[in-house]
Image (tube, rainbow, N blue to C red; front, side, top):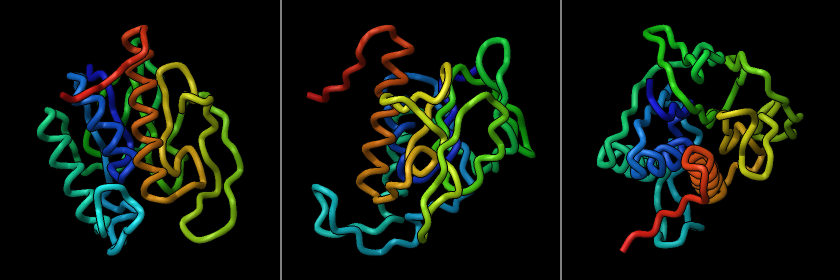
Length: 185
């Protein structure tokens, strides 16, 4: 059983996974390779970058995930269900058991076979019909978190990165039973 499975390998999902993998937790990202930021060529509102493409950010996130021992598989999630010890995440290729799940996918959320509430989405480009309703810590249900567009209509890259970090920090705090901090020296 893995500690964390992240559904969605876009900006929010990769940021979540980088945090949990860096903390030493067995982390898997399941992704379709269709992130909305993939075709964004000129992101100018990120600290530390004059301009950066979405593809550069995705590549950097994938590399960091790998560097910290996390794993990314290109598989479409068909269902997320509760199990005795956590969750079973099913794809066409395989079933994965995980203690925690973070939903960070844009698009349909119909794969969620868990008891969660949804909020109505907003109209506009890149918007979703509905979002997973969470508390202030990105928690949607016991050991289930949501980040990025799965959690909010706020689809800006910098917002999604922060939301992924927030979900990870709160998940790790829940896992460890105390506030989690990650300070590099």
